[in-house]
Length: 82
Image (cartoon, rainbow, N blue to C red; front, side):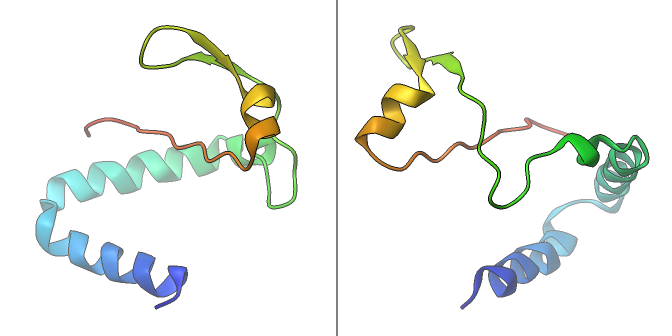
């Protein structure tokens, strides 16, 4: 299964899991972001992500460049609850 197919499956499944009112809030928030043109500033495929420092689970500051010296780096963002 391709990533696009899996994302479609997840999106379709969310129609049953997520209440209609919550889905509407999510869609409105997405439209507001699009309307703000914030995506004009977003990284695109092939762009290099700027270096950053973040605390690890022990509270120690970790630099992204240091991690990249060890191999590929995956960064995820958690938006929290709607």
